[in-house]
Image (cartoon, rainbow, N blue to C red):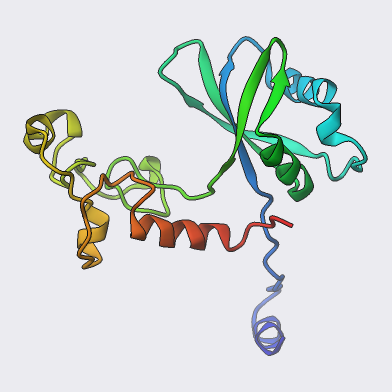
Length: 194
């Protein structure tokens, strides 16, 4: 409160507002890509009435944030931003009906990891590094060209080695990485799950 008053009194028209927590994310796995975005949301409401039963219109707000490619060129993973009550019900259900499919639903971390430098907190589009790093050994090459990966050697997480941790025997994208877990905790800290 004190800081807010100081900033507003000294700044030329500056306003201070408290940080609003973001809504959580869910991922719909392997969805066929033959529907428009608004049709997908309408179908979710219509075909999963048990998930939305008793909720207010405000509680049921959701939006498609982005889509991720899958190995199958006819499907995508859809990342939805939903209200906390819907997040809870969807993740508890584990699967939803969508058109002629029953798709898996899981919690989606808000953590962003760069696919170029492998660091956390930014994406490839905003990376300032000039060369791609290998997710297997951390070297200045792609994993497809990694001699250690081709030879079947154990991976070395560049994020954990950079942090001085002893256990680095995992890939830079591994969910077992202690550094990734720390960043995931920080990314979730301003997400409203309840």
